[in-house]
Image (cartoon, rainbow, N blue to C red; front, side, top):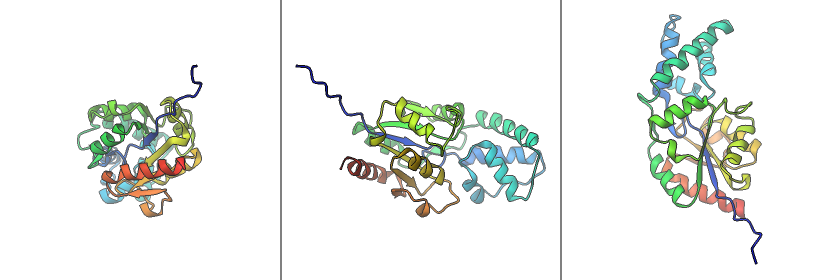
Length: 233
């Protein structure tokens, strides 16, 4: 007799990209300085500007302008955004590198049968360019960006769609990110969330409200195991 029982879907871990998988600040802030310099605006303070990253190119530019008390018309900001994206695409992995321990953490999760995905607010073509340049693309079953679906994070649509595209189940999925946007996305989707303390956030990492907080990728496996066990209890 043939069993009608379907095998359980593999667990899935969906990662944010900037400030979670990869330290992209060096190249993002170089592109930001370039577009600001065209308006005779001085370079941003790197320590302060790191925490402006995470909402896409336009928002990064707007935040940098606001920090200088500058307002520009929408058409100028749009032009700056296009110049930013063009320069960044050509220089996407000059200084950007995976955070320490990432590769080993991905190896350990894959060895346990975990499906890996990327759900980012970076434009999808830029996310793919970056992951290709760092030879990370083959690690992920699905890669989705801010423009992959009609709405971006923190709306639940991108994460729900990423989970579905990977053939996974919401009940066996986890989000990993560095910002309040990632936490809100996970909450709206109904999945637990692991926050990393080494990313880009204006909110102190311990105050993001994540289910688990890690300070290095060597802590990820244990956090994922614990959250999956809790979900199965």
